[in-house]
Image (cartoon, rainbow, N blue to C red; front, side, top):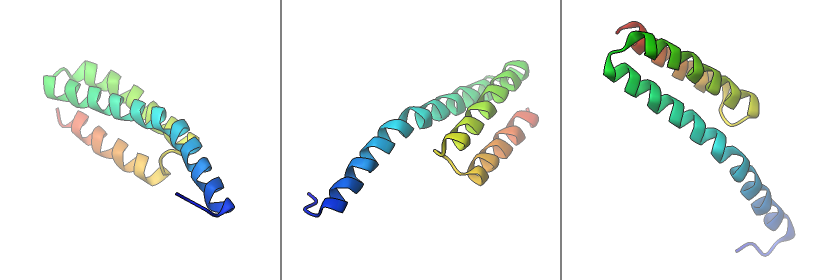
Length: 86
């Protein structure tokens, strides 16, 4: 446990940010999982629809500061490649 005032404040800030970021990160993981399921099922139309919503969620995560821009771009690129290869 922190004894210094600044360390206590840093712990509190970390808890606050974690509580704010966790639901956003969870939504992103959920949408990516749904897209992976759509790809594995073989339904290209459904997969392309889910891909657009997944891409939107990734952009929201970037805007909220949960994920870095290049990380989201890399994930989008990889998912798009999977959808196109169906």
